[in-house]
Length: 75
Ligand SMILES: [Zn+2]
Image 1 (tube, helix red, strand yellow):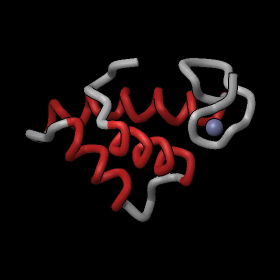
Image 2 (image 1 turned 180 degrees about the horizontal axis):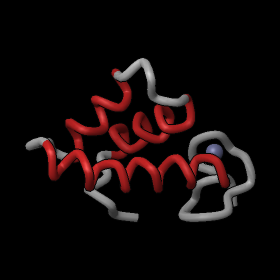
Image 3 (image 1 turned 60 degrees about the horizontal axis):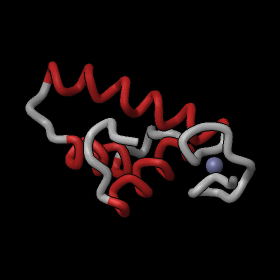
Image 4 (image 1 turned 120 degrees about the vertical axis):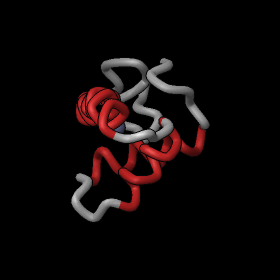
């Protein structure tokens, strides 16, 4: 199985190690954001993509999640 984003060897949920790690930190950070702000999962993802401080890995994951329209935290 290959990573759905970069095509490297996938280790978890169809992601390679780096994208799986980025995905987990996106999900974790959303819980913090959601408590502080009224923000939907999709709005949150587009904030990640727009944010110049987002790492490349996280940005790729967020773009991918927007594209497939994944619901919050789903696998
Ligand atoms: Zn990958």
